[in-house]
Image 1: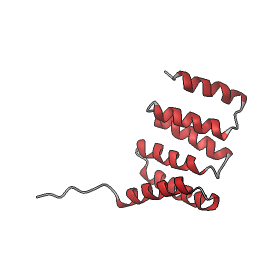
Image 2: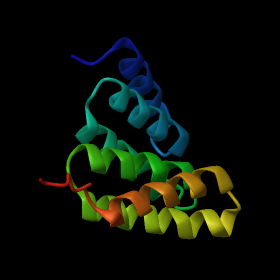
Image 3: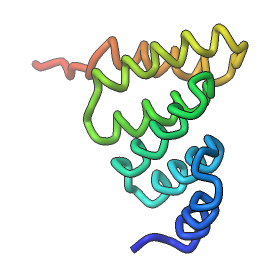
Image 4: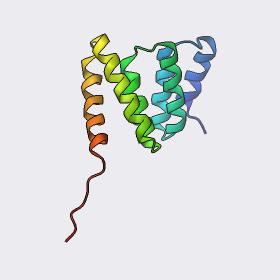
Length: 113
């Protein structure tokens, strides 16, 4: 069952369906409720309306990681880094760079005896 917050955002979205900020807020609310698939859909919608919304790429990548789509997450971080360089959004750019680096290194291997 969707939370009250999600329901409020959806009602406002019905009035402003092209608001990238509302789609981003909906994605964040879905992530907070552990609904990463729905969050990914909302973040993708936000980007469709504002392709240079840097911070959305960071959250979209995180949602993709949560649902196990690591290749898509890495591609999203790469695109977000490119956007961040163009827009000058350094904080999300730095966080995405760190996440991408961590994913590219792969899972940590535990030494065996």
